[in-house]
Image (cartoon, rainbow, N blue to C red; front, top):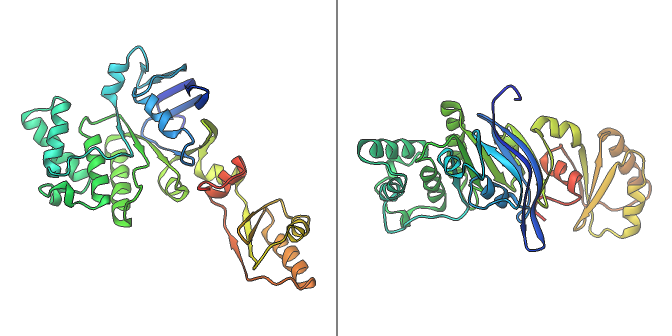
Length: 315
């Protein structure tokens, strides 16, 4: 990955709202043609970070370059190279998809044959060609998300920022959006920054993932590397009730690296799955502790996030 050109670099990028620090001294390099996931809970500061990188918000401290241009000194040139597809839909429901695209194409200064060609291009990428003449008010939530993406592609950006693009969409539209992103990277070497709080999306789609919480990047690696560094196996025990003394006894058994409790489930983390399972279940059988069920979970980005932050991704 490091052999690719760096398209975005940030140095100590910070944004404050009164006494609240939304983005806290972020240092970040983003490469050409990669899909970078910003994985963090709602309110972590993901939207604020990408709003700065797209010139929507000015940073209070630090600096950044985007496609070789200074974020503050060359903001007009940065705008020509980037596009932000926000969570909020900016669509005219009484117009067709084609009419919506025509309106936004006018804002980009597109005219005539170039405008018609560009609209046709983005409709194809978003897989909305057959629905172009339908009024947007009759679209499903997923179709609206795909049209939102199409609008963001009208200026053929070098860097595309997608802010939670699959919120509230059906599985079919989610797959359409994923296919579109993969096409953009393959055909145009587009760089995509993808914010999400869905770990399964980051794991499936992104080349690298930044674990992001409270305005800071806690780690940034390829997905497999994150899983190797922080991932473990989990033994999940489901009880009718789980008193403190039971948690204390089980957590002190051999091979239990860490644990946490959610409702009546005791989740045990260990890098020695076979040994910890034998240790815990053996103690439970010996002491005749009733267990509703137990399961083994493989490592995923949810457990990585939990290990780095001490909380679940979607608490």
